[in-house]
Length: 278
Image (cartoon, rainbow, N blue to C red; front, side, top):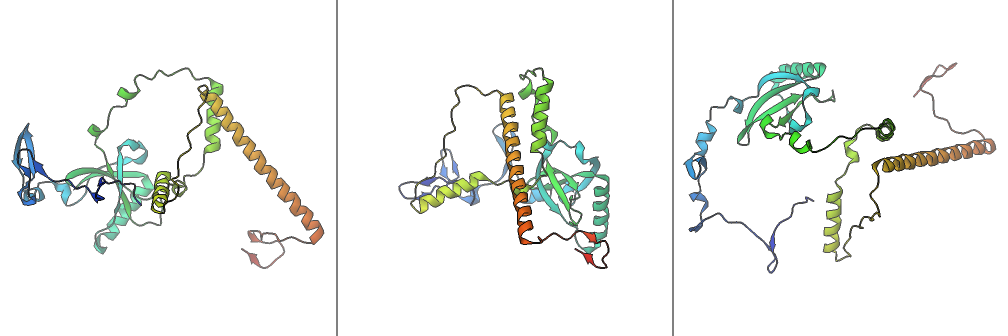
């Protein structure tokens, strides 16, 4: 289910459609509409689809590589959408594989331009991190003039003096929260909640509602929140270790009374044995 909503005429239950109209004229037929370019305020020149197809843009036919850069030099703010890149036929497969391998070994991205979707896009071509994938990735990028200057948004922030103990506290929290990135771990909770709402309405069940967040009598100090988070984390780890210790103790006691326990086979060759174990 997608989180796309539509406007519907409530008395009839029919979806609202939008007509193309001209002020003072009214609705117009599709074949009366032409594509125009506004070259001066309020003045247009008609452009035929065939004329657009024959624009003199080299990147319409192939990706023109202009330079290679280190991947970590590219600010993530420039990236837009990912695309798959594959060789065009077996005769290009060898050259494609060589370029892919070279980009992977040097940790570089090839920057180029390609035209599609009515505009020319800047793209960064990279080898996937997974060596088993034989293709390449192309990420469409924003042009520099499309990015806003962050200074205009951050200029009013007055950096306070950072105390060392506060910094160490924050670093410790980050350390405990650090783990390998697993994209499958993150789910769209909004989509799930919307699906739950729709199903409840269809089946005429009670509408699920979000619980209001508790109001605090005073503003929580950030450092107090960090300390509380670390303390909760430590208590959780202590409880987990306690459970593990209890289970180990129970297993040891059980082994004493019931005989030998099942052990995992060691990796590699067992001393004194001619058989390898898994």
